[in-house]
Image (cartoon, rainbow, N blue to C red):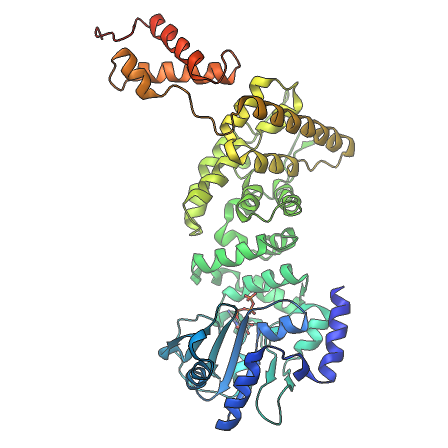
Length: 488
Ligand code: CTP
């Protein structure tokens, strides 16, 4: 399909590119630029995406001269509908409406990257500007000024690379990557999103410069990681990240999962490949970034819990618990949010084995109620994760598990409809217990409270206030407390 689109696009290029500059802003810019007798070009990702027929709302315009001046004129022309922000030191201006964003920048000699904090030092020509960009497919430009309107400029054969689906740096990789080492990650991100191949010399360049990623902020690294994770088949990107050596610099815990150990001729699965396969599996069912993170990191604590015994072979006892405990550290080192999203990933990792153990046993109502109670509203995501986690090569085994999961899901629905455990709040609160027995906050309150919760989850009493109240009095009595007792 992509090949077809690219072939089609190449026909477009050979004929008249201007027909495809359908965005109304290009006309305004062109009119203004013509009256000023200047040159302006639409460049970078917008051109690449136009040729790949991908939707793009971000437009970058390079002006030979001042980008800010042109942006101000376009803003005046468009009137109130737009918001203009000017970054004088950086020689850029951003024009925003509800629907699109255009960045205007003067052509420069030094390396270009969007939102760069580097002040602009020296003005340059369009050629200077394009050669300091990251990849040949991002170094394309279409002229917007008179006579040349619609003409495509492709000094580094970016069109050929688009056609052959190749990511390649315009200059020697060492030069392009030292301008901005994040570009190594961008190469892998683009390759994953677009299903492109990284050209050999460029890939070797990544391997050689991998250590330089250390000077890039963790926020920028995680932005790229999130984009890889949100692509259709992230495993492709993670294999490149691992093989190139990059992964070790910011997510060494994941890189450490790679490899197979054998004892007495028995090997365990390669946990790295398993993890990225689980991630691919979940991507077929969910667009939720955080569920995808949970899939990627669900076995992260396996190396530290790994044991081999003759009786049991390889075991990883408690890896779900340790994995959940490792998560805040991992998120914090990547400057990922330490908010409810992190809590959600932590929770899913901690619970990821529970549906599997249910699918292995005969499912009791009590086990289902406990799972519903612990997972709450995240039960559906947890089930997706558990299903994605079945990656055995043995088809029969996979089918058996998946059928058992169907049973678990059916049971979950039945029990939830009957007992409403998902958003369970104990019908008797700690306050109630303290009031009834005239107790201050203490251990006894907790003991009574948990015994009521357990009795409900185990189906010993129904989930209502009357039965819970009865049980509270009974438990209190067993512990030597009565209504309004004062002797404690
Ligand atoms: N660019 C660059 N080096 C970087 C970042 C950006 O050379 N480190 C240039 C590229 O020409 C790129 C353009 O700036 O096409 C716009 O950058 P950006 O918006 O970050 O990327 P896009 O290519 O538009 O792709 P995406 O929106 O998917 O990030």
